[in-house]
Image 1 (tube, rainbow over the protein chains, first blue to last red):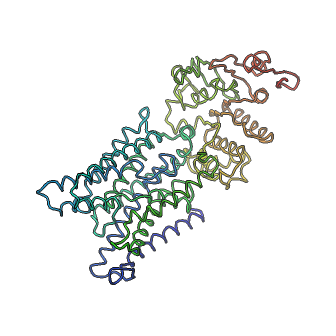
Image 2: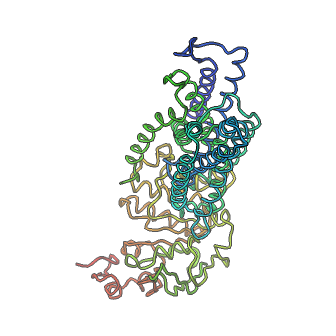
Image 3: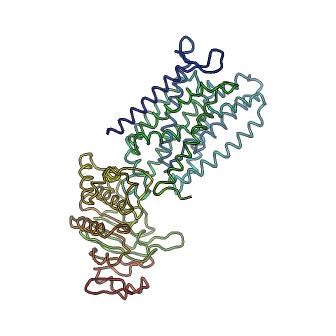
Length: 341
Length: 245
């Protein structure tokens, strides 16, 4: 590893550790308002450890998923939810809540249970994976996954899922709608399903190792179809691996924290800035960057009191990620061969 | 030997190639010439196994290139596109190293060093590919192709001279001659007919997807035939082929 890359890994590692430390130490003020710093103890310690674990696992999933998608779609603005996975997960979770709310045998606790924690991950994960299968079927051209067709298929499926979600929300009892809206803002659970967290980390390790091994092929695939094929890359197989890897990782992040915008988009760019464009290094660095970003975002939001509680994490990541999106878009337009529109 | 038998291909209603047949021996530089839209790029892509022709067959050293595994084919056949992609921001060395990714690491390093030296890009090896001029980028992807294919392989290039200054043109022509002299076959699409006349061992002249001439440059690039194809005058004198007035 050359000196700039060593420096980049050191910066990422420091960001990650400091983010974890900040999340462990930052706490609401003594009266529930403002911000304080305290070493966690007693019952608080496992809660903060749970939040750190959830944020790291979900952030790593999003970071790696974003990298794979940006490579698959040859689009630096691509993000995990461009395939419509969050919209599908949202539709499934909202539908589950609606069913639960309209069945008199189930209490309001069931609604919360289905949406926020416990088995609430099941409908969301199912919805994300179902959309993954649909977009796979729609995103092929002459039997092969095609980047542009995939984006269009994902956009159409996301729009339809969004419309159906609004319909289901309008049918829900008013008392249940708040829970549904909260789900769409993303939540880093302080009491996570630890098996799910470990499974997500395991997925990141497995898919990250595969991506690192395919690093040269991913570099070549970032050129044109003709150049990549001439360089010995089997694009149909590679795209299938990238699609499935990115989709499963995005579904895992939805299962952990609900839909969280922009982390999967920003993390690969942070990794590229620190380590360069080669995918072998990025396959390791992007999940680390994603984990660092989400754990920092969760720490920072603890310090932002909006009156009715802390700032929702999805709102914070969208507020911070939006400007980054614009900066990246402008920088790519200014590059040789950049967009002319 | 590269053998093309009755290659035909269409894009929708438009006929791109019409029963193209030719034999191209190893050790030669073969120039594909013709007007824009005459089928040069489609034929090059078919030779490099990047497109499946609707009918006909292609054999390189007795084997259909599309029957080879992609990694094996990459070591036999390298393709240089007319407009290299700028989608990934690598250094020149990293870009050239993409060509050697199917080789063992030590062998790949030697291939990359050798290719950079042949194209005289060693001094720019650490620079970003994006920072190069269009001509230097073209040379960089030629270096990548040199690092990719083994000696005696097939090198397919689409207008590689288009952005080069005279010095770079001479240097690249020497590199292509070196590939042919080591037993390889170079198939190159060219718009510059005087250049084709100078560097090629044989010329394949295409018109609307059909072969209208194939043989030594002196036999194919004759002013009357060229005037009929390109609708402009050419002269052949002691200095070779020139564009008339």
